Every structure is written in structure tokens, then in C-alpha cells.
Amino acid sequence: MIQCKDCELYQSNPDSKGTFMCNPFTNIKEPECIAKWQLIRLDMLLASYQGMLKWYGKMAPLQDKIIQFMQREINELDESDNWKLDDEEPEEEEGI
Image (cartoon, rainbow, N blue to C red; front, side, top):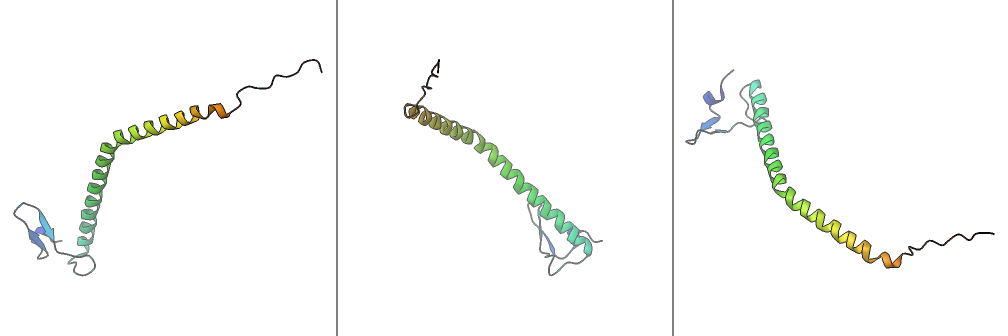
């Protein structure tokens, strides 16, 4: 198995990160390259998921404030509509 750094489809960048020019659908050198490609994609997927969790963490306080505001508004609407409801229960007649 050849290492990616020794493959002609790998380009080294000055910032010590490599660029993969291989495409699993057209120009894979070895069967192990597909497994490596899958690991690279899983790593990218994990990084995007962690970014999404970080963003959700930033949005959580704002969501809590919005929910509290909406609950207050709903409670105020319910309280203002109380006059429409007949809260008095009819008393049962005794001695029938």
C-alpha cells in the first residue's frame, strides 16, 4: 500500500496541509484509497457536525428568551380572555 504523501495525486501545501486530487469515481490507485477517502469524508462530516453544535450552543440562550416571551404573551392572552368565560358554577338546588 502506498502512502498518500508518495502518490502523484497528492499535492503538499506550504501550510502543511495536503490536497487530494484523487476522485474515488475516476482515478483511484489502490483499493485502500477508497477506505482513506471514506475516513477523510467522515472527518469532514464530524467537523461540520461539531460546528453545527457550536452554533446551536450560541443560539440556545436566544431560543430560551423567545420561548419565555411567547409563554408570557400566551398567558396574558389567556388572562385577558377570562372575562369571556363564565367562572361561576350554577349552584345545585336543594330539596327537589
